[in-house]
Structure formats: C-alpha cells, structure tokens
Image 1: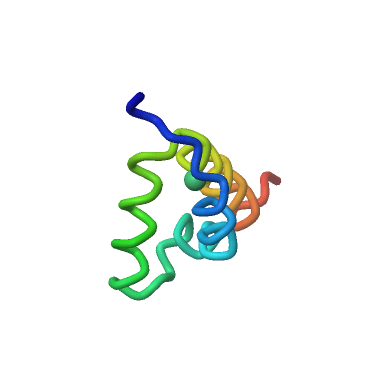
Image 2: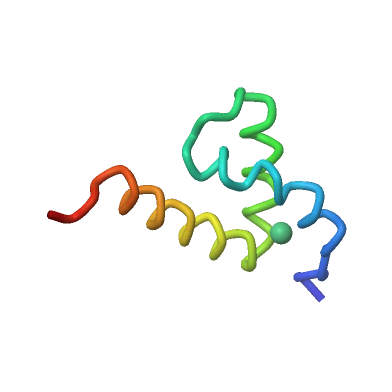
Length: 62
Ligand SMILES: [Zn+2]
C-alpha cells in the first residue's frame, strides 16, 4: 500500500490548509504542508479547491 489513510495528519494540517493555499505560511510550515499534501490526494484536492475559491473571492466577477 502506497497511500495510507492519515486522517489524524489531515486534521493536524487542516487549520494550515487555507494559509498554505494562499501561500501565506512561513517556509518551515510550507515545507511541512507540502510534504503532507504530496502524499495526500484528499488534501491536494482541498488545496486546489481553496485556491480556486480564494481566486474567486479576490477577483469578484462583475
Ligand atoms: Zn491530508
């Protein structure tokens, strides 16, 4: 098994996911998030969604 369900890890990084998606984390935590997200398809999806959402919020359509 390559992918182990690491829900506790996901909970651990859940609070940082938004900041990570917005690239507003310090390098140390960014590295930690990147390491988790690289191994966690679910969080990858979350980050993608958050980035999409953030882009929409920052650039409201007319
Ligand atoms: Zn995860």
